[in-house]
Image (cartoon, rainbow, N blue to C red; front, side):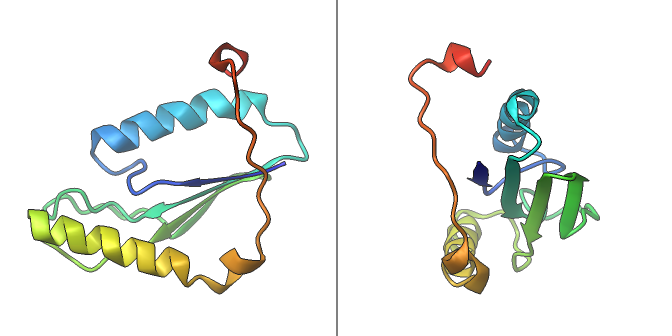
Length: 116
């Protein structure tokens, strides 16, 4: 099964969203089979313009888990800057050529206790 997670914030970014998504992924990983793949597409750390982090643009956590980070234009964390950043990431994701050829499985879980 191929699993794709699109998230605006992911570790090492400093935000509640990145902490929550990291916790979700940490709970998901033990349930992955060897033939499963997990791809996380996120942004480079950007929550605070003063927080500079040298995260890698592509990070392979294991043979079947990959994180890809998209660089956003610099901003000053204002409301309009954040709105522009959301639009920018939407535009980039919508236009990734590889995304048009990717096939991902989406499995809806009716009982979350099966995962956690």
